[in-house]
Length: 196
Length: 285
Image 1 (cartoon, helix red, strand yellow):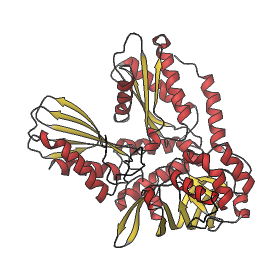
Image 2 (tube, one colour):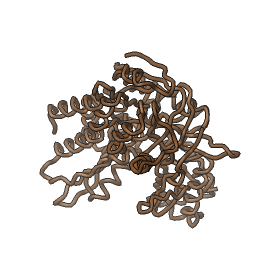
Image 3 (cartoon, one colour):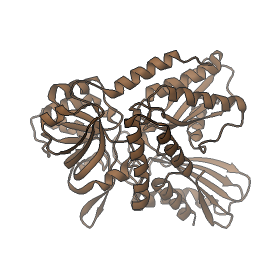
Image 4 (cartoon, chains in turn blue, yellow):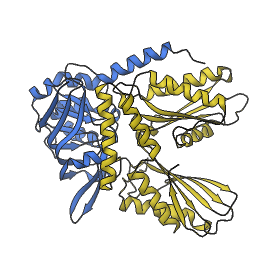
């Protein structure tokens, strides 16, 4: 297990070098998107329209931050990850269309996303769930916000970060999915329990 | 004064975890040997310090504000309690700040201030006396989403209850932000079992159900769930659950409801006790 410090944009080579268990700290620009933002981005792209951010080599973060407007600027008060499973239906197409190299969230993703990460050369990394105040400490500034009509948690926040992490690579570009491995083992162990 | 006390309880819960939960997370780190489990717990513990030092919410999902009110029959300010809860929630959303989490299911419109139809959730109990106790729970969406209800055939007995809880944990996997506190409500009926389950997650860690049979079941379930090896945040390890709390109610002869509710490691709760004159004290149990 290695430790990496990566700057955005991330290259395919950098993403493909990462393995399950590696720890990554990211500096540069990350973009939040939950289910509503994924849906809207894909609807626009399918119609051939542009989305307001360039995600080539980008990091998409499953996060609904706590944000407050203060003196004409946005300030972030909460920046931990949300459950990634909700984006499973949309993430593979999102990775393919926009060239994302790292998906950050918590709780893992499933087969379709795992296959897309392998095919297009990207990884899924987990930010520890709920670890919000620590993530705030890595925020330099809010660069932009798009689609605020979706509500603060669902809007697309473009955020500059410094050493954002620790992120643990849990699905890599070789097709290894740590969550799946842990759950399969847990199911095997559950069958062996003598209950009652 | 009632609003102020409730506001402070909400703020305290958002920023600082109860001592028993902090201690349980530190103990979990002692037990873990896998590097990923350890680094996850270390980040969680560093986050607790960062939140307290910077006065920031522990987690960005500041939850659905949920209140358990024990209203004394003789409490002189009882007419203002509901209004005080609502205004304390709105103020906390603005000032702590909390994330606005009340969304209209039809229009997806966020009310912006954590109030709306049925939100905050308030459970009312009228009790003897002339005081007021308000328990606050900040219930995150990730852990709420793994809630489960099993309507078992009563012949399934204790083994059936165990199987249901294990099944709920397997289905939940990494989603509820483990290490979790597992609440189990047995009996009552569908809604009562789930209500008891959620309330059980708020019992202080390390306490057992006074009924020895139930207490033994709690210990067995804790060991069984952790033996599955799912660990902190589902990356593998020894601590999936910090504890299992079981509460029970009498059941209908034909039913054996088992409600399962989980609270993420950020088990944010506070209790504010008001005296008859409206003065108050904030406690953690």
